[in-house]
Image (cartoon, rainbow, N blue to C red):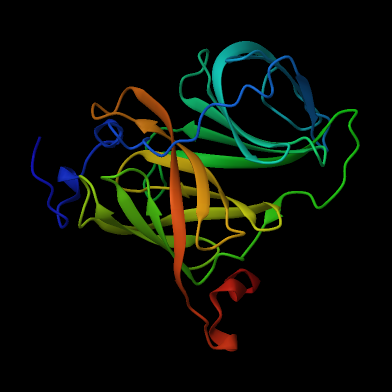
Length: 278
């Protein structure tokens, strides 16, 4: 493979080049959902039934008002990670539609779900190849409590060091509601850095879904991180995109340990969190 040149993005590693060893700090797969049926209902009436075994999820999708996604059923392999008590991060890559992957944040305690669908789309100038769609919903029949998952500016200004394995480490600087910067501190991408699109949602106090979409490499990630102890942040995530050929979807999960390095406090009238008010 061509040596990495930070100034020449054509030499940057493809998504499948990053995968070996990157998942060393991944948490074990949880089988706590095995035997459960989780029915998710959206405000527009869209209804999705999930039936979990130890490692497969059978699902039925019934669109509601204004939902142009056709009705469908399927059965996919999944991974689940226990984030907090009765809070699970579930990942599956559709076998019937390989350009689409699903991340579910399933909060059994509060009867809520946040769905993040990642889609690989045709090239479009000025847009990332992989994009995210976020949809909060409720678990049918369980009753709801607590706040619904919602976008948040809570991470803006934080600089966090992330360790994915003994060889892979990065830092993130959360700049605004839309942008964050990353730099590779250790690993095959050491010395590379960029600024990419991001979205942040709060699912429980101090627990955030952080999703990013890269513009150089055709890939995107959905992660969930528990920031309640900023000296020992725990993250679970998935990367999804295209391999070196630019043709084959690649999907793999990972985990990381993080710690807060610093927090930037802006002059109030220059606060990036207010950009959305412009």
